[in-house]
Length: 184
Image (cartoon, rainbow, N blue to C red; front, side):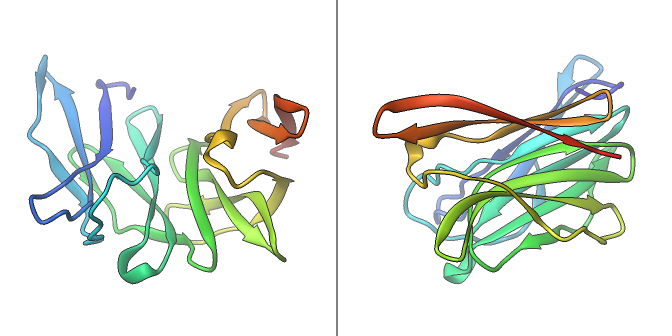
């Protein structure tokens, strides 16, 4: 939700099974026509579980998503305002598995989180990304089970603290774990 109304992002689908990111806005009580965020041209004959996430700060917004064009898994983020998104920024193209989240810190920066692999383990990673394209070194938040049962890790900012929550799966069952990271 922006100061001027809602913005929705989604993985669009063409008749040729191209899965690109699109968005719509509600302006003056009317929904806009769908508009492309980026032309990844990911051709997949199936329904990718990995959808986009969006966050806003006043009238600015940012979306993060996973794509795997030509079998190259990639996590991207794009900043937007008004009726347009800027060029996507590649956040990770080494070994991401997806399941992204994004939270805007201010008009110029976001934290993006995603599931990836590191030294043979499945982990939750996060990085700060600026609108200009600079980004912090990704940090590992925690190990996580790679199965779909572990869900989609979530994050929120409150009082200069970044809160993460995710589903931990073990032989004893599943539970929700949380971790707090200072933004200072």
